[in-house]
Image: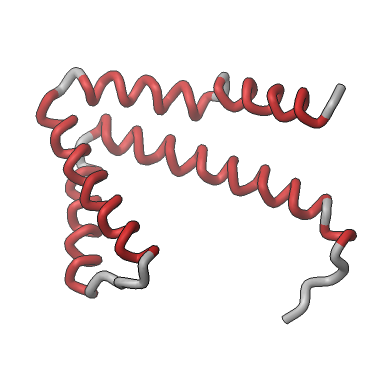
Length: 115
């Protein structure tokens, strides 16, 4: 079995994971509710704009960040959106953990980290 076969196995396992199933289920519920979908779409759009600005070095103001945090809190009051956010967070942790496992397995190639 090649490393690519194992990567495909991992991708399949992730697609079948509880977290991905929960995201899929939450998205379906949100899409069935036009108001929730619109609120989430607006939030994601603003979030993307801020991330793109940050990548170009244009850091958002404290006020903008507080607005986004408040908007996130308001959206989280919607049970289906909160369910989506929670599942996305759990999936993100899994991806970070897998990335760390892979990175740690190659650490010996480069020796101890330099600071």
